Picture 1 (cartoon, rainbow, N blue to C red):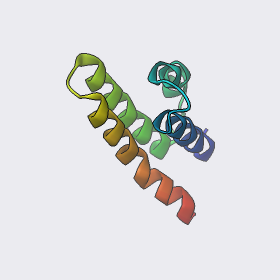
Picture 2: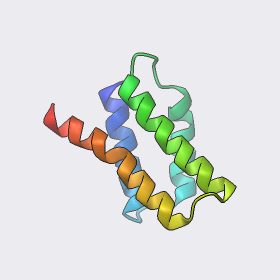
Picture 3: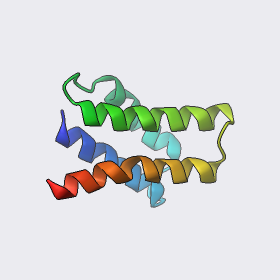
Picture 4: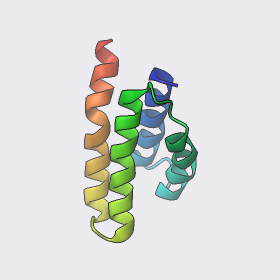
Length: 86
């Protein structure tokens, strides 16, 4: 569950960022994935953790929707670039 998990998270998050699915739909898919990431999948775990923090901050009212979307896009950018360079 390493590179495949990273790509799946990126793809689902891009669906949200592109307006293809709602945030709650992404969260419904993401929650079980977040808790099932293997301990060896360090980059997937790091990316998922950042996404989880951003969504939590939005849920608490600490971020606007625009700031959430910007943060989510920024959160996957380094991982997407690393995936392309492999």
